[in-house]
Image 1 (cartoon, one colour):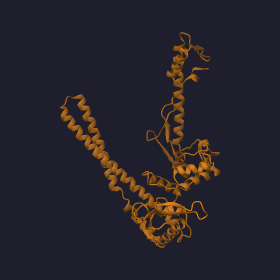
Image 2 (image 1 turned 90 degrees about the horizontal axis):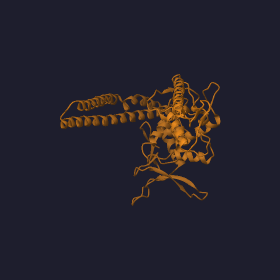
Image 3 (image 1 turned 120 degrees about the vertical axis):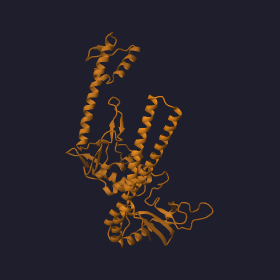
Image 4 (image 1 turned 90 degrees about the vertical axis):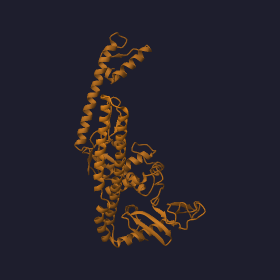
Length: 424
C-alpha cells in the first residue's frame, strides 16, 4: 500500500495513523518504505501525505478545467446509466431510446391530464416501470426532475452544478457562481417544445400555493361554480356496481345551510361544452389571431416597470454603499453615537423601502412575462387548429382553456387563455 492510496488528505492520514497507534497497530507503506512505529515515520508520512494531497488537487483541477472547456464548447455529457430516455450515440451525443421515451411521454401526458407528482410516481411504481436509476419505486422528486429537464425538448443547459471541494467531492447547485451554457437543438427531442413550455407554466401555476392544485384529472381546478365561486371536484357514483360513473360537482355544494343549485356534470358533458365554445371561437379565428398579436405588446408591456426596476436597483446599490461608508467612518473616527445611530437607521430604512419595492416590481415583471408567454402559447396553439373541432383532446384543452364556469345545465361559460369568455 502507498500513502496516496491510504488518504488524499494530510489531516485525515495523520489522525487515522495516530488512532491506530493508540491501539497498538502499526502500518507499513510498502511503496515509500515507511513504518509508522518508526521515530521518523510520522514526519515522512506528513511529507508524503501533503504531496499526495497536492497531487489530488492538481488532478482535480485538470479534470475540472477539461470538463468546463467541454461545456464552453457546447459538448453535452450525461450519466447515461441514470438518465431515462436517451442512450449514448456513436458520435457521443444523445440518441433517443424508443422504449424509455414512451415512459417520458407518459409522464408529461399524465401531468397535463391533471395528475399530481405523487400520483404519477405511484402509477409508475404500480405498473413496474423502472426509474432512471433502475429501481422499482418512483419518488415525486424524480418525476419533477424529468418534467423540468430541458434535454427532453432537445436543448441542454450545461454546468447546472459544480464541485465545491476536491477533497470531499461536495457538489452545489450553480446559482451563478460559475458560467452556464445553453445549447439549443442539440439532439432529437422526445417532447415537443410547445408541450414542454406548457408543462413549465403548469408547474409554476400549481406551485403558487399548497391548495392551488388538488386533483388527479385534467378538469381539476378548471371548473368553477358560478354560484359560490368554488371549484368543482370529482365524485364517484355507484362505485361498487355496474352503474359506476364519475361526475363533477361543486366541492361546497352541501356545505352550510344553503345548497348550491349548480348541476353536476359528466366528463362527456364538459368535453361537449368545450367543443361548442371552442368552435364558436374558431368561427372568428382570423380576427382572434389578428387582435391577439396587435394587443399583446399593449397588454403585457413592461418597459415602465423595467425602467423603475433599474432605478430601484441603482438606489439600493447607492444606499448600500452609503451604509458601508458610514460604518467604516464610525470605526475609524470618533463620532457622536446618537447621531451615528440616527443616520444609520435612516439609511437602513431607505434601503429596506427601496428593496421592498424592487422585489415587488420584479415580481410584477415576472408575472407579466408569464402571462405573455401563456398568451403567446394560446395564439400558437390556436393558429394550428382546424376551422372546426370534432373531437376533444387534452392538448387542445390545456392549450386553450383558462377555466370553465357553470351557472346551469344550459348555461356554461368557457374562459379562454386570451381572456375571451364564450357561452357554450
